[in-house]
Image (cartoon, rainbow, N blue to C red; front, side):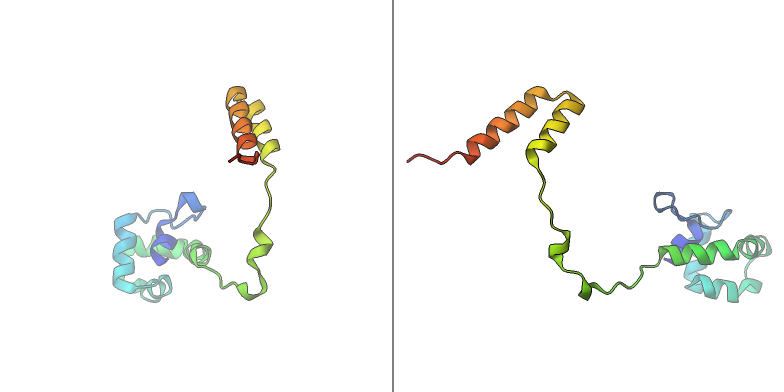
Length: 121
């Protein structure tokens, strides 16, 4: 989490500290363990890197808060709250029209009808 706070993560829209790359972020976290501890020991970090960190302290701390998982009380949520029914006929129709899968749409609807038909012995 502290590594990502320094480095950033474009996929998750975590800015990170400009000027701190993978190697430097890894080295700082290995040496100091946390972003807060890095800032508590800026005087023992090379001046060029320390200045980068000083200038972007708020970014680093905000990035860390974005990376941390929040505690969520799941006792108030039931799995049933997330269940829904999908109208497969409508879904297939929309897909068929949007992507011109007319023959696939027909095939899937025929398969569905066949599966729903009572089996004869």
